Image 1: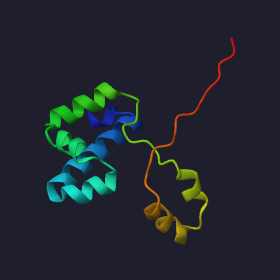
Image 2: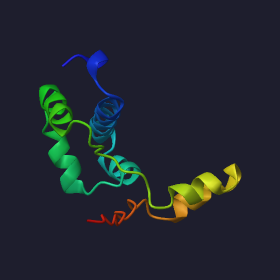
Image 3: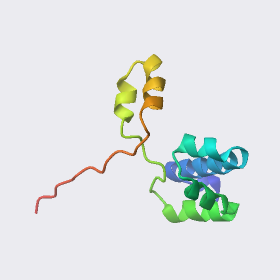
Image 4: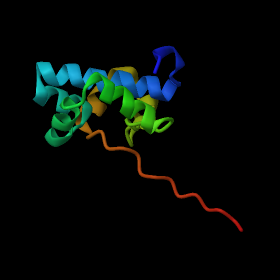
Length: 104
């Protein structure tokens, strides 16, 4: 797979995965904290070869592996000087799934 042929979602997934892999080689605990990973997830990611990372990115396709925080809108709306403090004080939980009603 050529990096130039990746979609924006695939490119983001690839960059995040490589950032995590490099981070786990340097400092596993800090990388888990930064990316909100469990140790088991980080250990499993570390077993991937570069070809395995590309294969995962290709297989997942247009689905983001890294979802926005539940409080993203609050962080955007907060004053820039306060956003960092709020982000550090609140755990980065993913946003809950939205309920969509389909009329028949």
